[in-house]
Length: 391
Image (cartoon, rainbow, N blue to C red; front, side):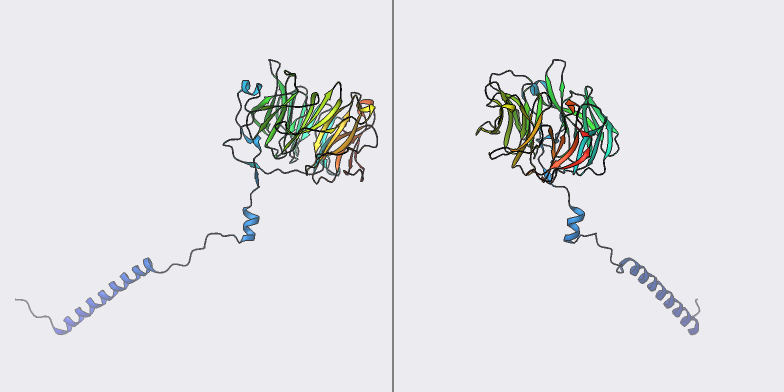
């Protein structure tokens, strides 16, 4: 028989059980608070105001410079004027950036300087050969001694070399590649391109010279050989096949391109030297320039450079003895304007702004001293930039 629990003891036990229950409830409540309590607000993802977005997120504009492709072409197709620079499926190239820089030879080295001659520095020894600075001013291409050599314009470090003829290298407008000529074992001249840092060489096509339009959409080649009775230029649009375009006026000497038209320097035994403007398909041919004097009858027209705004063509009347005089002609047609005050001026480039023309004065073929000058398209502001500079 169980004895009854005294009232005092019972009350104590009941109080103890209640206390334990309260503690348990507090523990559960605290655990629930820890799990379900509101947390401090997390920092929001970084956002840009419109002004910040413009400066921080802006990317270079894109253009469809057709030479951005990095796929080589079958050489037999290229030799017959087949596929050139295939742009299909390739990402757009960076926007064209022109640095206000100029390259020139001084002594036995090639230098780079600001357009006003400041900050001049030697990039590489090169007592001879042809050279061309990339539009962005970062890479110097030199064709000499059977090779094309690419140098970092800042450090002078050699980035790449390849077999090439001593022919003027030609840069793409966006500086993504340089074009040069190489004669194969079969004796056929071909135009190649390669990136400023080297890598895969790509055959553009068979040709002895090359020009590219300012927007990079059009490439024109001088044929590697005169295999037809009618002078021709090979033209490729937007990476398509090269199409022969007939040219009036005689043998083709040099070519230049705008985004819409082809400019061709020709030489004929009957008519002498001429410069023609024609559509990219050979239509609407117009003679822009013809010999203006008996002295120019034996000269050829070369060194053609289109102004940055595309309205004027700079060219030189040249002869074998080094004679060279500069002229400007409106691409819409008109009377050529003489820029030379003497017989020996050699166009180098337009300034980035288009307000000046940089050129070399002095006939080094005749042993004369030379210098880099600039002059405005109206013939004013004629000023020496670098004494002793040459091509």
